Image 1 (cartoon, rainbow, N blue to C red):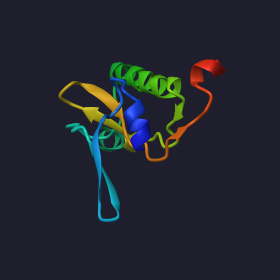
Image 2: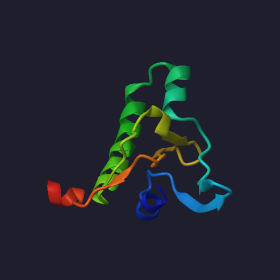
Image 3: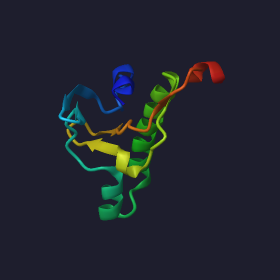
Image 4: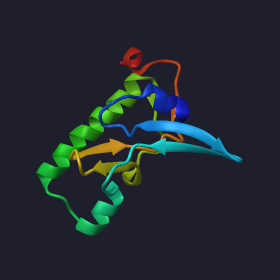
Length: 110
């Protein structure tokens, strides 16, 4: 996960600030994102209006594109891992614990 966080620098990706080991645990300090995750928003709001969905879908697509261009597959993309930064009004993809770096970059596949 630390390797992936060091590679990815996209606007719509949660940033890792630092990491350290405490006893037998690896701790990763991530940027603070004030807001909820997509699952919590859908549970509270129910349906979102179409313009809102389009706005956030574009950001999610850009984030996935950035991940794939760098030769990484997220492998755990779900509403819980799509976080909202209410200060900036954008979404950010987080939790790269199951992400996998592949040897062939996405740009070579297309």
